[in-house]
Image (spheres, rainbow, N blue to C red):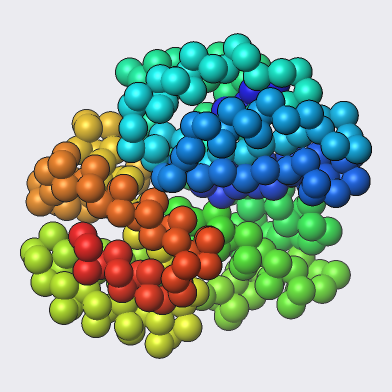
Length: 301
């Protein structure tokens, strides 16, 4: 079996992947047959060996290849495409990719088939508010409508932060419904404006200001991974607007992104996105601390 998860909503993508892994580990009784590979340093020969290996003390193997299209070699991607039909039934392969891959690539076309692929897109404002209501209910809490609106306004673009804030608010409210006052009291400030300052400084080549703004965010207690997520999100908005697509964006979001889009070429945005993926992989594999990863990102943009 082959599955492909991709798209700009990295929170829902990550949750889908986590749920699949948890289901597999429960059924398999452990991680003996679970293999994780990274697209950035994807080794085709290793991939072939892993897919052809028979499961040990289980009925199947699960191989996860994260960010497959970060592989720099189109030749390897083409070889992977040609190999797909040879994957045995005893092996489940899950390919993932943050963002939108190049849809012209043969591997992308081979993977985007019904019942095989799932595109996790950004949520609209209405969908985000419904996400808040559903998550609160699923976690055993209650929330008033004006509190939903206040929480959405506090962090409209970041499901990772929303998830954390929902847990905090439910714990604080206890058995009663979460109120607007609870949100105003407990929810961390929106860091979007600070991210704008960083991006504006980077667009102007002023890395000193960008580093200074980053240090201010870190000193204020903002989690490094959340800062990275927000930087990633804002650059994706810039690319979206530069491509002429304002779907799902508020007037403010679209116009702010448009002001930045004029300052970055497509070559700039491609290079920045690849750098963000590289830093993300380094952080997740423990090769670099998150704070240092953010500074490295700024210095390499």
